[in-house]
Image (cartoon, rainbow, N blue to C red; front, top):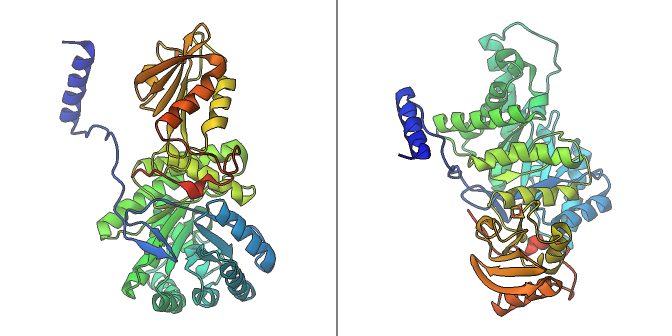
Length: 431
Ligand code: SF4
């Protein structure tokens, strides 16, 4: 018996003895209800929706309109706008009217925070979705309290929440629009932190209190989010939320995000660690990558996470080896040239591999392969089949010719340039 077979057998026996399930190889997407947000649907097996939030002041109507349109053009599928007071709520009405007048149907979400009942009722009369934060919606200033809440005190706070939430539920039901119950780790109500600590449990119970009130009044167009700036807390909260919803027979879709992630590369890595991990576990129906940058930069980051997981395909998937001592050409510059020639062919997988020894086996089922053979020669592959050997000087042109001969070529918009927004050209979709 080979060592690896013996190893697998031992692992199986060990799992059996310890009553342990082997690690699942993949997770099915969690089944959720479909929640309509204007023309977009979150959950219900639909594609994971990409969303973001504008940074313009809501009182600046023209600035907000311009930013919303720029975000929609970049591929943002739902745009959120803050409405801290009633004055901003009415401004959002003007903003939405102007966005629609200019021909954009992108759904708008009003973000409501402190003492938000009246504001939420006002915006719910025209927007597609209202986001409320349970930690702030019925706001009670933290007093540094440590002693337990009595059942009567808990009941009183829940009654106050229900009283404030009911008018919002009523309008949302009348207009058949959605609500996000968006819990943030950093703004849990004092009652929750006393009862559960500043923990994922507290976040989940905070969301459940609101969910139960909505269900009591037969309102279920709900999306839930549990965000934290610490990835492990965000992961734990969302996993626990799924477990609790399963126990309670709830199937609400989840909006994922790592909040206050910062900027630059680390913010993207942090967001990917949180959002990507949960998506890989089948959890999550809409995402936002929060960056301390122009929010337009959030959109490609979202799409990259989804593409890497095979959940959406908005650009060419380039597979390229890191190069090593075996590499038969200057891989970095060649990869750049191949990308420049082909990165508008959304839906294709193209591999650029340094050597003929390992390259073909590691091309991961790419549609086309560009592999260094040595002596200034490149072998072009269609799938796993070598098609022709070509001199390196003309290799990129030959790759293009091969794609053309297969009828899979299209000219880039404008002749040579790469499309400014490839997202509108999403051709192939997985999952
Ligand atoms: S494919 Fe070849 S050149 Fe590229 S890293 Fe592997 S061994 Fe090195």
